[in-house]
Image (tube, rainbow over all chains, first blue to last red; front, side, top):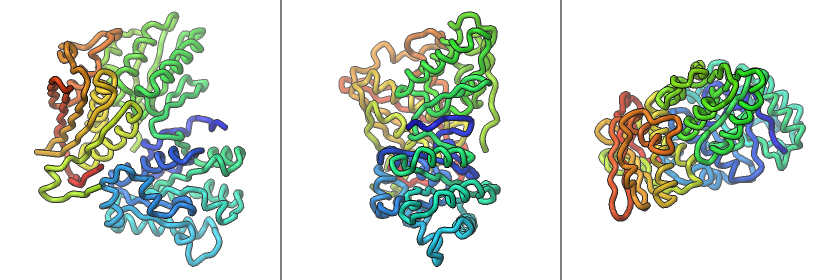
Length: 293
Length: 149
């Protein structure tokens, strides 16, 4: 099954404290790559990182899969910046899951992280604890849609990862819609969606995704040719190589019949486009999006 | 996997990784995490990541399909070396003096690298090329010298 992409979708590397994100995977390499990116950037940014991995995976194995290149994670583990927990240990001494107990404990852990001098807490929760506990999916969905207070102070971020091989497609979709943010399956992925506002590109545009980037732009321009105007929303593009930036400029310059193409992007990407000659294309207007805190 | 502290931290690389064509995203993440830990903040972080990407891309496309990346923090700056075993830059070694044309086939990446970093050096030899990039660390608050990988 494919998981839809929409206005809530971003790449995992763009997550910040305050984000509550849905993630999904259907193979183990994708799972650990996604989790590893989330953890590595949290540690680098001075946040405490809490890993609630699949209960079937021992902590040692989870550590090896998260940090195959080793490095500063070893120091983070020793200092307590990186912690492994189980859902059972988190809600102890309760013996069954309740949203109230779990949220209360995560509040406590966030407070503790702040008191210890970290910028905040980011938690990764592999939702494989749900079938292991035989917990009602409706209870979990209720928790996911009523946890706003946990994120309000922007001191806590959470990635809730669902295995598409285990959860039914309708559960996956309900969870995706139930989270304020959804992340692309793997770091480095690129995806696109069309809205009435224009074409939105999300993720990384580099050598691996260049063909996809060019195809999406080409289709976006072709679809908008009748009205002669297009908004290209690149505000959730985490990375854009020089070759992809040049492809964008070339395609816009060569598009027939366009009165105006508006690119909405980060300050940095606007600067790259400017350096590569965006000002020479009269129909192109580049405006900068508000940066995420 | 080794964590280093004290004086070793300035001698050992923060990152020492081999890469191939499939490693762009993984490499970018490793460099990003290490650069943040070394104290590189925005907008210089995004500039550095793009510059490193362009050099790695060049090594993959024209330098034998694979290479070796080393990242060091020394004397208030981040230094990145990308080593490949390809035929070398040849005529490409000349960085275009001005903004490349939108339709330019080549040279755009290297020109951008030059724009986005404080110093670029390219050494070519019979065994391949070494491209070295340097960016100054403007704000080193909270930086640490532990190895990243």
